Amino acid sequence: MPSLQISIPTRHGRCPAHLLTPAVEGRWPAVIFYADAGGIRSALVELAQRLADAGHVVLLPDLFYRYGPYGPLVPKEVFQGDVMAILGPLMATTGNDKAAQDTESFLAYLDQSEAVEGRKVGAVGFCMG
Image (cartoon, rainbow, N blue to C red; front, side, top):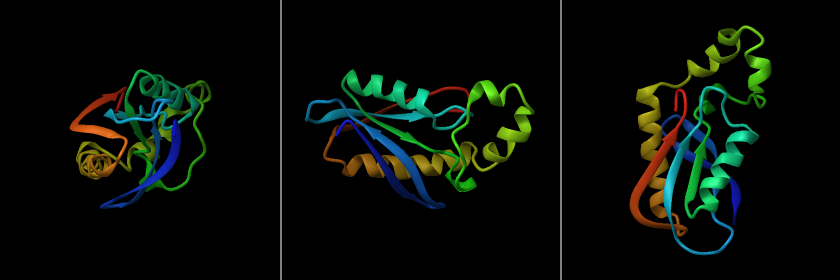
C-alpha cells in the first residue's frame, strides 16, 4: 500500500488526503505533511513519498477542502499572475485555528491505522504548513 487517496472526517466536512507508506509491509512511525499555499500537487506527493520510502507512514491532507473542488495549482503559473486573486480564496478557508482542529481528526485517523507504529507523530510543513 505505498499510496492511497483517502477521506478523513473532520468537524467541517471530509478532508481528502494522500496516505503514503513504504513499499514493504509493516508498521511505521507517522508523519503529517502539511502542504504549502500551493496545495496538493504532484511535487508534494513525490516529496511525501520520499519520506515514506525512508520508513514512515505519511499523511498529506488537503487543508483547502473547505473551499470545495479545485484543480491542481501550478506554482510557476500562479506566480506569473495575480497571486492573491488565485491563492487568497483558498487560503481564506483555513488558518491556524482550523488547521489545529483538523489535526485532531488527522491524529485520530492515524491512531486507528494498522500501518502506524507507536503514538508519537512527526510533522513537517512549508510556507503556511
